[in-house]
Image 1 (cartoon, rainbow, N blue to C red):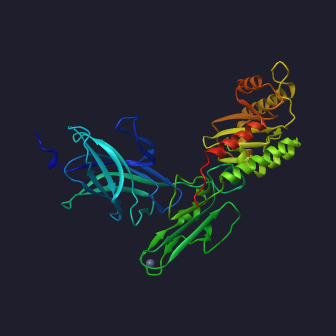
Image 2 (cartoon, rainbow, N blue to C red):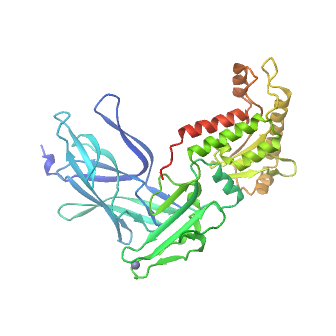
Image 3 (cartoon, rainbow, N blue to C red):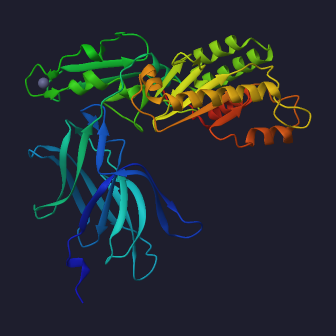
Length: 438
Ligand SMILES: [Zn+2]
């Protein structure tokens, strides 16, 4: 039988994952991976961007080689960066036919694995390479394994494509404000490794601002050419798309980008407190509408790509809000007031609630009949489906079980919730919100 120790360690690049965690199965020594967003095509609003927030996914077949070096190259041969990987045998072997192996990247302990030397083993790791690897431009990139004898083997590739950011008009800004993960500002700083030239650009939800040497992104030049002449970068994607990161702080974007979050836990709790205080005063519908408009996070349960205030649907009616979701679902929202009667003593929907629901049903009918014209009026090219939401009344003063049934009742394309449901959903959002690091 062939001796495995004389074989090189084989490596295949599988892709990059947005998140990955190796976890132990119950009380056994066996490990499994929880992986989210494994991909070979990276979409980015801007270039350059850093790979530091992504996990590398590779497959390994163990041979004698224990120190690996993986290098990323652009199609023109330019080396983007490389990462070292040390495979270390564990002191305690789990069984005689297999070894537990620790892999480390540049000296950092990563994960222990249960390894069959004849099979491929999947392995994910962080590449905290220094200097960090920046992808300079869209294109095709290949990954190479460097062996101890100096030979290089191509082990895979990935693509980088640029995304176009939605313009920051009023409906886009409103949508970003309803997103708990959104950013209020995004800054990027690029520098030259050899001289002190910097490019600093900024995008924010507030109107055009410039601060601390950061220039509004649309005002930067097309290229960054440093003083010493060794760094030349095409930065048009930053100029045109930096604001895209406000609404999609792509999972853990890291240096050279820094992001200031729009919301923190304390703010969510404060909005909830003020909202409940307002509801307790039984204000007119308009006051509730205005409060929501000023605190759009209250609409976070309707994920928005665009969000419209008081949109006129043709000349037939005005909804209170309309939300276009990233899946292109259009949601028309009708706000009533806190005193809207919801139920009769029997537990059936009361006339005022039924009336609102019928009204929204009529809207849907009108939009179905005049779909194209209705979408043009909103400035939307296409929707996949349209539904309605009625928000009305308070929970207290109704029998709990009746209320639960009323809310759960299947009304087809129209759903109904109370103002208390809105407040509660903000409270549970705040619960899940991790305090932001400085
Ligand atoms: Zn320079």
